[in-house]
Structure formats: structure tokens, C-alpha cells
Length: 257
Picture: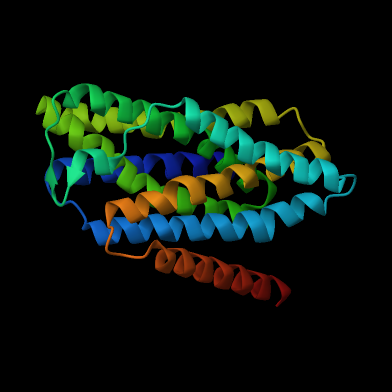
């Protein structure tokens, strides 16, 4: 089993951490959750725009039209998928630190699980593709994905636990949303094994960069603001970009030494 696939498994498995927190009552504060989402968005934005897209455009044989075109395809593909997905967010089910009991909480929890699962699928592909092209960047993407999978796991497990009263079912449904991400990585591993052309891999990287930018701007940053309206998600974004940028500089310095 390749290291990129292992990274994808670990990133998807972080959903279980949030699920466990959601059923044992040790829920992190909204401020911590919001900061972690902003931090993850910062990592994704820096890697996508400063590393993945330039690397794709710099590949021998890759034309700028194809590179930027695939980036736009990734953006539009994410927004197209987002419009078709059922939407139920954690802030619809949580108010402060207590669960809200809507009239049909079970149905809402199932929609939330489905929506997060479908969002997680391309993230698994993104983690695998990035790690396959550059293991250092893959670690960064895996960390960002894992960070925002924790509140996602909590968001699924909390309502399911409130609706069913079963910790086992809550963790199970949250696990399904994480498994969707792992499935995306496994499919990428199976399909990309035969696509060895550097241009093809660069085109996929450009599209993945578009997906990650759209995910950060459209999902993670607004969600961070909604979870904690009194905080500024930009702080988490800036910290994520700074930490990721510094780590990449240190890694490159160590390689040169």
C-alpha cells in the first residue's frame, strides 16, 4: 500500500475523532472549531495556489491553456456538485453548546451525513493525487483535511446520537462520511495507476487545486464564521498559510543542506 493512500486513510479516519467527541460530551468550543476550519482553509489555499497550480503549469508539455482550463474545471465542478447536494450544516443542528431538536432530527442527520459524504469524496481524490505528485504537499493536504474532518465527524455524530440515543449508531454514521473520503482515495489509486503521463497528472493536479480553492472559499471559511459568528476566520486562514509556508521553507532548506 502506497504512502499517499495511507495518508488518505488517515485523513478520512480523523472523522472518527470528531464522532467520539460528539458522543462523549467533550465537545470542543465553537471558537476552536471555527479556528481549525480557517486553519485548514489556509493550508489548502497556500498549497493549491502557490505549489500545486505552479507545479502543474511548469510540467513539460503542459500548455497554459490546458493548465488554467483544468483549474477552472475544478472550480466549476465543485460548485456544480455543491448545487446538487443536500445541504444541512452543523449550525442548523447546534446552538451554542446544546443540540437543537428539530421536528425531524433523524432525517436532518441523514441528509447531513449524505451531504458531508459527497463533499468528502473529491477530498480523498485530492489528498491521494497531491501526495502522489509531491509527498511533502501531500502531508500538508492530509493535515488540512484531517483538521476539518474532526468538526465534520462531530457534526454528524451529535445529531444522530440525539435522534437515536445510540453512541454506536452515531459513530457508525459519522464513519460513513469519512469512508467516502477513503473511497475517493482508493478509486484514485486504482485509476491513476495506469495514467503515468506527466501531462495527465499535471492536468489532474490543476483541477484538484481548483477544487481545493473552491472548498476553502465556499465551504470552510463561511462555515467557520457561522459556527462562531463572534470570531474572524481570517485569523485561522492566515495562521494556516503561515505555518504551511514556513514548513515548506524549512523542508526545502533541509533538502538543500
